[in-house]
Length: 357
Image 1 (cartoon, one colour):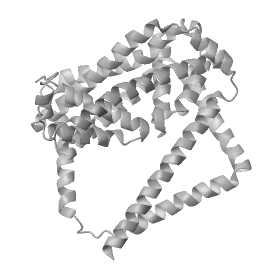
Image 2 (tube, rainbow, N blue to C red):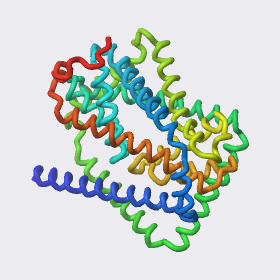
Image 3 (cartoon, rainbow, N blue to C red):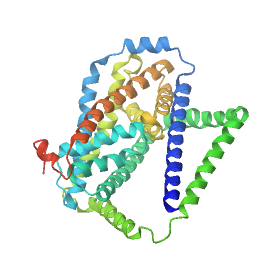
Image 4 (spheres, one colour):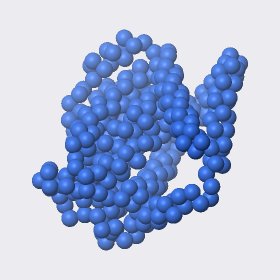
């Protein structure tokens, strides 16, 4: 009976995951349609054809450097736990996680920890704890960047949130409520049904089921989360974090030089558009916020006098470049992960590439 219940629970969980995956794809496609619904694709094609792509090589170098520094910063978090991993394996695990995140949002963090467990035999719980710490730091940095954007461009930011986010959202909800009551009812039914399944099977887990394993998991994860307090070079860690976010802004700002309508925009606009792009990527949709990124980015540039066609073209170029980058580098990282050996032997097989202590 228990085996039957376990199998049934697994099937329901898988069905729910597949349904959620399909719904997220649908959301992404709907947002992508909204982003380009009123635009002429022939104009966008002409804009992309005439863009200056000479900046792409510089942006590529900055992007790679950004992720190498991010991998080294992760190394610094793991070192107090007694793990002296190679920079190569940290970078591979990081890029593998980015690729998985593009396919299944929020799964990238788990995947990179699993990859590191395979290549360096680092306990998943500890590496996951360091990733959670990284995420907290990233959220703090993003909030600081948003505050900086408000200070530098208060009028632009305020107008953007009111006219291009709040009003369209309320307007869209009104239209949906008026024309798609059946769709909303179905979505509500699926949500409540899924919630009911989770509650039903959650109650079947007794208080003593694998409690010792759970406590051990949380203990090791906590070790990873507090490892930041035991880093010897805290100043260097802060410097790397600043460089990561400066590079992140440059990865958007430098694209301004590729289009005639954005050549005049300053670094302040680059900061604002980096914030807007980050908000688009926070939407849990496959493809790095596909659709949401394009919609917000194009509407954000409208505030600087950039036409919707140019804004859409730039959104396609920036997001498309990053997508190709993650698919290419992440794809190579996936091959490395597939052929790596267990328990740190990969460091020898790769001749200690990028090994830094």
